[in-house]
Image (cartoon, rainbow, N blue to C red; front, side):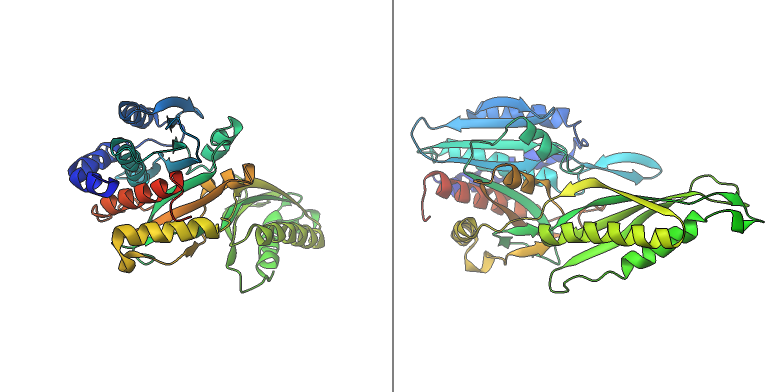
Amino acid sequence: MDCQAYLKAHSQEILATWRTLHDMPEVAFSEKKTSAYLAEELRKTGFVIKHVAKTGVLGIFDSGKPGPSVAARADMDALLHQIDGQERAVHSCGHDANCTAVLWAAKSLVATDAITRGSLQILFQPAEETLEGAKACIKEGVLSDVEYLIGTHLRPAEELPLGSISPAVLHGASGILKMTVEGQNAHGARPQQGVNAVEAAIAVITGVYSLHFDPMTPHSIKVTQFRSGPNPHNVIPDKVELAFDMRAQTNELLHRQIDSVRQRAEQVATAYSAKASCYWKGGVRAAIPCEELIGVAQKAIVEVLGQQGLGPVLATSGGEDMHEFIAAYPCLKSTILGVGADLTPGLHQADMTFDKRALLGSAQTMAELLARLVNEKNK
């Protein structure tokens, strides 16, 4: 029995795994039950388990024969939502589906003796939603000895339909630039004695929005926070705190955006006799396409789903911290499979739902791709 047949025969168990994970949503670095469950499932399968990055799980299966070291990674954390007046954790980004596909791909590879050489590592990573999980793993040297890294993620219905899988999701670079605009407070009856930080901040925003970059490269800059503090209504405020969500399809453009926003903010604030101070709160890097892995992934998708199941390479302005591994380990080759699942209404929405039939195809494709890489087939 090959991996695809094995997974098809266990389709109900795959769905049961998803239900188990879906019913235990936990937020970043609190994925204790999720971690324990996944670690035990890998252990029963024959993987050596290491606990990493607070709540992360690394499973290692070594064939004992020379060959490449290949890894699959899935993120574990859920998101907090306000539901009926209460804050609740919900798997609204589909990380429960990602973990299910990777876990069952690993199970199938071991059960069918498909790992004939090299080693397979399975990383269940915490805290992707806070963009801290990959960095925590890297700090501990996780995956530093890996040659190929494969990820997977559900995609919204407008990107991919059910039964289609993309060989690469090219996330953009993104992050948050924090800014403080400082003026001088004064009584509202004597504005000439002060510098209105709100007026200066509004001018700064207008100035930032007048910046222009290469329109052929997707990008965006928008204000997502504006706070002036608890000033009395008749007092001119002396400080405003801003936050800018910044996105670009390339790392280079994001760096240019950051520099340009800082420069423009300082210039405009000075013109208002105010002062603008900026600092980069942090973010994630853009994906770097790996043509070799995209080609192997395309073959794996066609093998499992047929030519009609081969989706296009997808570019998205959304961020993903898995790309941090590429920056940390320059020799690492990586791609993220995008899984069509008729997902609606969208990722990060509390009522997100998808067609569970996508779980089987996702696991089968992941297993096929990992098998090809471990055994160096069709490379």
